[in-house]
Image 1: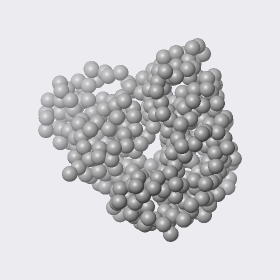
Image 2: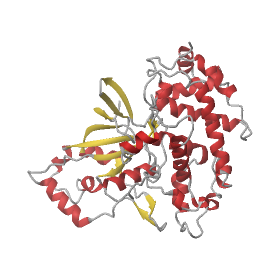
Image 3: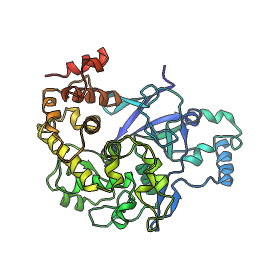
Image 4: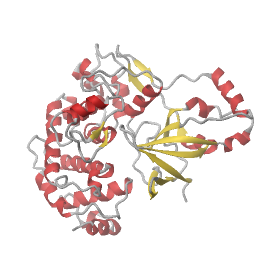
Length: 407
């Protein structure tokens, strides 16, 4: 039985979709945490993206919660499925999940009371419900509106915090490359951490000629005029920036938060360099290229793979196919990682041999879910079609799902 099972509404916005649900304060205290996310100002110094706890303010908030006029109409903003170490959690036994019910109605499933929800905005409101600030314990039954982002990388949690609190740098017309708070072109390339490199690659894929040009949702701060000028040939499908950044990150870092925090201990104009994270063990397939600053090699590998994907599994657009949705694109990047783990990595990997048979699978089947399970099912089908796994590698139930997708 799940710890919590509630209804939610989906909200579609340019950065990514999120869900609105109502949760009791007592439940939120069990499943949320407040993280001091790291980001750099224009001088490259280390700062926390969450405010320092203001105890005087918490006393006032606690008294307000106790009052007869207590009301919190603004959402608590949560980024879920990340643990307190900033690592993405893939264990389906504890991951939050979302299931479509009808029209725009969804069911939010929270399997356990594990703390997998980082508070992006609302940490003081939540702490006001804790001891010693709250006197009337019946207030713990108060329901609070929550805006819930699934699998949102740490860099975008920091971006949202900055946006909400008015700290983000204004976006100019240079193709809005500073829209996510990472003005990487102004910093020495050797100082870029994995997140900054992934953001940079994502922008290149979206704004230059590539199979993903115009298919990546960009920040709402870009003007409609600029958007129309850049993406004049409108595209039929799109996924969030976070989806692509996360897919690229998995190729160069198993613990991007660790790398970010470690590298942020030095000034960008001083000793900061990728060599600072070289001592850490990391199994990501393109890690050595990242450490050696072979960024163009990494980009060429990714873009070459995506071109083959466009000529095979993304060739015939179907609005009902999950291969064009978030779970499908995530699974495509999962396939790329598995290919690179097997191959002797070079720019000449024969990606076609791994993708040519995947065209024989039908990803419009209603058995696929827009969730972590759906991502796993599509990934299994892609790996099976590419000869990277066989019958013996799959549970019988998973094999049945794969075979059911065959045309």
